[in-house]
Length: 500
Image (cartoon, rainbow, N blue to C red; front, side, top):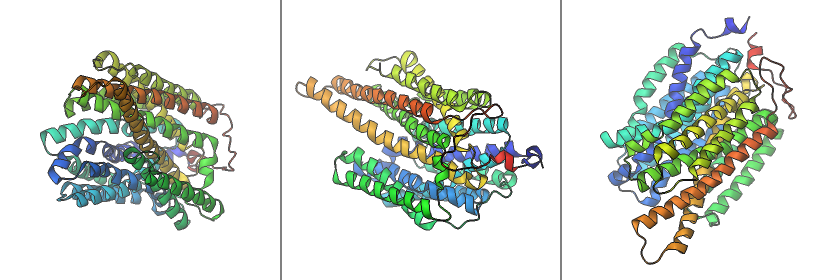
């Protein structure tokens, strides 16, 4: 049977509903940020507690992604997708109805748990649904545009809902999205035949991976609030190293590992995961500091601040839905991915010229557009490489690694760059302050901190490009492809070949 005959005839409609569910997950990474001040005023929690509204979600999401990816492989991707979708909506509704801080924090953690089921199931459904090279490139383009632009769109939607309705609608909005995506999924999404992993779940591996990743994300969270040398920070990092090292040992000896090392040791997939995780630090740096700059220094409203990120969203869409899909089957992946990250570095380089009086259309807009364009191309290529030579039975766990790279990269970016900016701001004030700081002096100090962090981000984006150049050596699909470089012993065959 040919791949064309075996393909789901409603696969493009299915992609619409899969992408809609993914949008909901990505939106929730940022939509609540703008709602936090209103939620804090309504529920009366402290500034110290405020960060946990975000952290409760990222800890559960980032820590359980590998577990969720393997569950999708074993239990079935469509089934896992629907369970994650419904569970996410229920958790969102609970959060919207919160009457105290504990209820809100519990709901956010529950959202993270179901997002860890939903996100890898969604990406792996795209992987096994689209088997023809050019179609898969287009599908990944749509999906990566949603994944990349959803965070910035969350800022816009969060501002609108908070300013004109109520902060609770930043959580309630997931319910109608779920209804649409869920009904569509039941009707048109179907799992690929013979692609389920029939092995038992690796319980020791799942526990070690989840605890290790939670410890790692928690360590970066504590570093942001308590400092890099605090006991809780160092203890969390030490625990993460021990747990993840134990996880690697277990995975190398068990019969049915949670994360087969072949998924990581194939140099193209490993390079894509690492490069993407590092590049995402740059994206989170931009979202973090441009949000602060526009609202605190410029005094813009939440809605206007969200709209200001549209150039980045447009750049992401053009890069991932137009440039990437048109070139993926014509050139080698690193010819797309490395220049994409270099374009992102150039965008951040422009933003290092930021001052208190900088012009949005002349400086900020082109910087954000360049970063969005570069990351859009990089995102779709990374998703393409995540499926490079992977067996359908491993599609869920490979997809989970893409999401894990983004979550861990985002956590590192937020903690690292916020710490760099705060330290730089304090140092600038120490050398320029004479008496009480004026508002103008405080803004100058803040912008100095943002610019210092952005210089770090330029270096981070250059490092991501260098990693891609060194590790990614796959040739273009459908042409005279170079060998995949399967040093890790992974002799997988593409999903397209298995459809014949």
